[in-house]
Amino acid sequence: MGDREVVVVNPPEKIALPSGVETVAGQWDGQIAALLAEAKAVTTIKTQAQADKAAEVHQAFGEKGRTIENVRKLWVAAPNALVKALNGLFTKRGDALEPERRRLGGLLNQWTMDENKRRADEAKAEQDRLNKNYNAQVKRAEAKGKEAPPPPPVVEAVAVTKVGVATARMVWTYEITNINAIPKQFLEVKDGELKRELARLERENQPVEIAGIKASKVAQVAS
Image 1 (cartoon, rainbow, N blue to C red):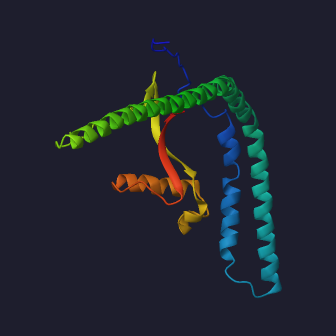
Image 2: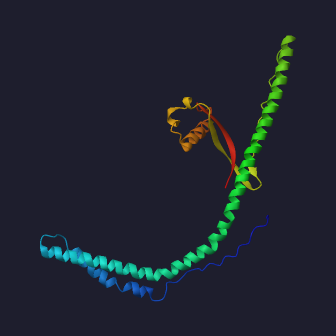
Image 3: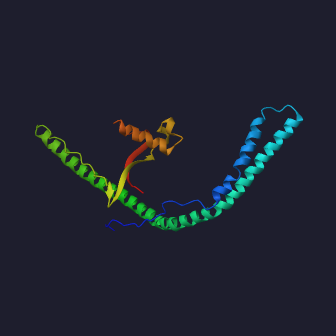
């Protein structure tokens, strides 16, 4: 798993046009030039004769275009089949990896969230213990008429940001605590807009708070 994979790739440098195809395509050049010249000569239609001529040229354009398209389809049928076969050889092998890759990503995401919650709970419990001890120290100091000791340090949980070689990015999540308090612009809840607002508040060093919503960041393993 740790060794760098050596991939043998020998694609064709260039696939040549089939023999004769340029001659086949070029057979219409003179006819196309003649049709274009006839069309450009029609600048106005004021008589029946002019209308008949314009209709004739217009019809010729359609017929010639359909002929060219039908011949094109005949020539590209075999190359298209080849491209389809080549795609099938590679994509089916890549597709075979995808379900398990996604499943493992889901397991990693769940573990990351569970682990971060566990760490946050541990940090909270430790903070509560320190605060309890500190409050007791303050009361003893007050009882003796002494100055209160400095408060305990803030215990912060270290979030998981990497699992093996998979990087976990921190993303915003939220739960609605009071729908009546949510600002009007977020009532038609558009998940993207709400998360962009949370990210903006954080970026601008403002309190990351939206009324009626409890926001937090969780780690998400990159897929």
